[in-house]
Image 1 (tube, rainbow, N blue to C red):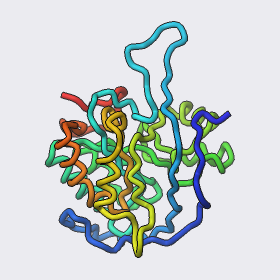
Image 2 (image 1 turned 90 degrees about the vertical axis):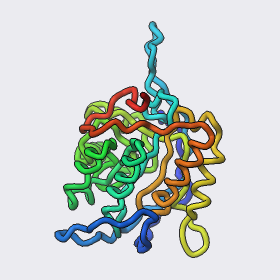
Image 3 (image 1 turned 180 degrees about the horizontal axis):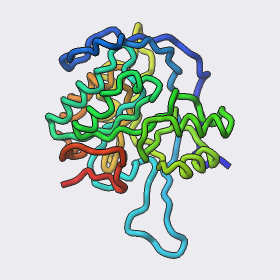
Image 4 (image 1 turned 45 degrees about the horizontal axis):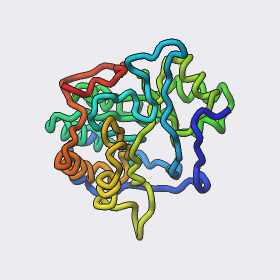
Length: 270
């Protein structure tokens, strides 16, 4: 039985995408030891999912973990960044620095296959006050793998206790594997759909910004925004923050460096 009702729209075809443009944020120095990695992208597709909570059958707890909100019960909005900036790996730490300067904590779900080639990026993000969590080793569709393959994909991912399965897709088997390895599932309440093609490129900064601004208040309060490091989402983030704050929402508060573990409930509020 599938715990989360998901259907991946379209085929999971591979297309080669190289993000060549400069981000809106100023570029920092690149690593001399590593060249940017060209990545064969797995197409992203929208996934329908319903919030899941776990509560005792005999005693209603004060706090019940909600996978679609990643344990966020602070009233604030958590920005999240998936995958990897394949042609500009240090885009992650630049956006991390920008958010740190604005007093905002985010969560980065990185693909370990690439993160291991730049071993300073994960600790830098954590020093900047951002949670860095598991997005598996190589971004495979877990439900299409054998038990052993799925277990290896999760076990060999970025060390944390929070897991975002690729495409948000998993069933009871994958949930059981994650539980056995000490992981909580983390999904989202707002999908920017930044991977969608538009004209000669992908969804624009303004369109991504509109996706968040037009989301219902129920998706923003205690909400989780999903975007990707290698599309236009990082460039849209400054405007997204401004829009949310103008509408009276607050972002997850950054109060300094963090470790591998992500607290539950999330430590987002004052």
